[in-house]
Image (cartoon, rainbow, N blue to C red; front, side, top):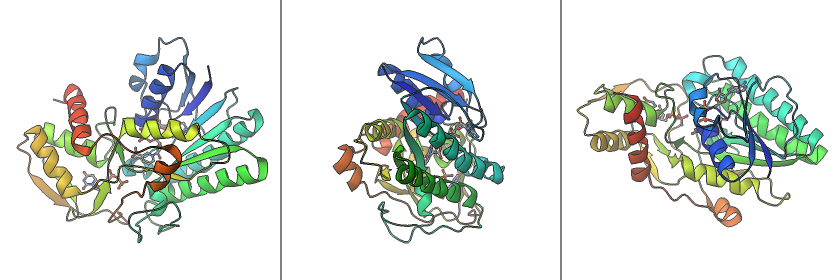
Amino acid sequence: MKSILVTGGAGFLGSHLCERLLNEGNEVICLDNYFTGQKSNVVHLMNHPYFEMVRHDVTTPFFVEVDEIYNLACPASPIHYQYNPIKTVKTSVMGAINMLGLAKRIKAKVLQASTSEVYGDPEQHPQKESYWGHVNPIGPRACYDEGKRCAETLFVNYHQQNDVRIKIIRIFNTYGPRMHPHDGRVVSNFIVQALQGEDITIYGDGMQTRSFQYVDDLVEGMIRLMATPDDFTGPVNIGNPGEFTMLELAQKIIQKTGSKSKIVHMPLPADDPMQRKPDISLAKKVLDWEPKIALDEGLDKTIAYFKTIVG
Ligand code: NAD
Ligand code: UDP
């Protein structure tokens, strides 16, 4: 049995990861400050004898003896990470320093949940890990993008300077059950709006693209990356290369829910990336991983979930 710390474990992705790690027979310590996560995401795990919750903020040091650390703590939705941008930078940067310091001290392996946002509004398409990105350092998304970029730098520096065993995963847009219904991300927004018969809010002309991966595919990729030999650190892209415009996504969701909602257009937020699609050849080669769940199947599962929580 391994002992595993998951920071941000009460969030959307963290809760799925905790569940999977417990199912595989590990002991899981779930750390969260409940900024965007909720106890209800992990309430079904509370009676598990090898599951433990800790209320803690990663910007302050934390000490525990574990074999592995998955560092997911950070708000991920633009409205949440822009709510208190200074705190977002602190969470990424000081959170990384604290988790790397802990990993160094206890000789644990540590995985950083990085993001496709390190590529910014990309000029190379699809995005390979070797691409350095196109990020506005003073724009509204900078607190998240630059925080995550600095965290990657810290991970690599701790590896090179202190031999800390690190893994960096660059996660592309992920969706599924337990996304917060009001967290503002596009898949949850459109599904909630469609189920409630409200207007579907497309920002801009809706021709911007994203590649959406179902949460189970991501969790599989994370676990495979953690299990790689110590000389493989990443970064590695984990995402579904299927690329859709926001207009196509809205139309799919309207059709699947049978909704009478109308599409309305609202202003495009500043620095909103126009295109995004992962090149996953590295993940295929090193992790023998590729996504298994196509957008249609994943949307059906996600819509079924949202039907249980919104009327
Ligand atoms: P989420 O907002 O649901 O989860 C983040 C969790 O971190 C929440 O439970 C929140 O309360 C917690 N948290 C935030 N600040 C904290 C702090 N200072 N101390 C302790 N806990 C804190 O978001 P998510 O979609 O589950 O994302 C999880 C991670 O994956 C994030 O690091 C995010 O950047 C990364 N990521 C997600 C996506 C995606 O599409 N979902 C894409 C790329 C990267
Ligand atoms: N978006 C939209 N309507 C919404 C929410 C988001 O058209 O109600 C757009 C947003 O402008 C972006 C895309 O959907 O182009 C994905 O947004 P999200 O916040 O989910 O993720 P990110 O921009 O961080 O990839």
